[in-house]
Length: 344
Image 1: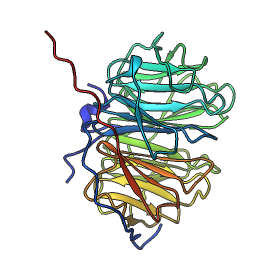
Image 2 (image 1 turned 120 degrees about the vertical axis):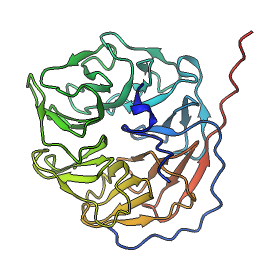
Image 3 (image 1 turned 135 degrees about the vertical axis):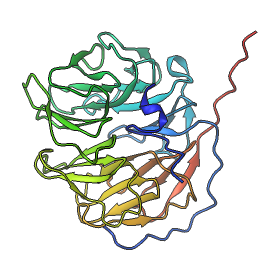
Image 4 (image 1 turned 45 degrees about the vertical axis):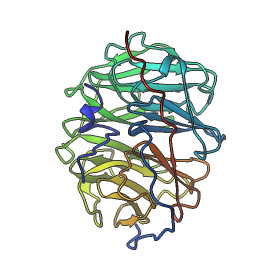
């Protein structure tokens, strides 16, 4: 089914779910009305650029050229597809990968204008997550319902990394840049690790015994990582060997996504079933953030690596944007996709 049937996964809509220790008050307009684009399941910010991509469940792929202020629906090969994952090659930013729920991976080499199917060697077409190592050999990874695949040619072709992966339904990915280390989170709540040159995955202990929806690796302490799961937020300081709860102050165990501010690594953000939360002390304590978007839930988060205070959140048919570290927000409704043509 892919993306865990929208009930679980890396970037689930989870519409069934109804640090800083103080909330951040925001004056904002009324929340927007959903556009019909469906939940925003993936976001990708192009480095050293104002270009941002948003993948949706029913509307296909959108692109913004002004950091999320205005959005345009992308046509062509990705039109109308369920876009479940996105990744930009940090070293060659014109190369963008889009993972889909049932059609595999699509690749663009011109910054997202034209797209082609890129599934050579990819035996499972339900893509849950994508990741690209920014340093040589710049490996790309695709997590699917049936395992993890690696590409060493920019996403043109794929090879399965099977050995040692007892749970093939992989729902989250994170890479340690330049080290050859890649982490994967599974539907059953395991976090697995594959080291540089290793032939097998190494499985750690269960993390909350619920699907892992997102992983985040500390940018300067690569043995520290966070796991967003359906049973709470967890932290490991020894490369996944031991996990502990990092959810003090969170008001729900339904954690949809987690991200680390690349400019201030002690600052974390978590999208939850109760809204957005922020921590200023590496996850020890959390406080809620008022995004001004009412009851809208956010499935995914992206932070600009070069502008740490620039944050994007993907919600139901809309993207919320902050340029000041979450002090103020603007929510932009995505343009509605054209109605499906009726068959004669």
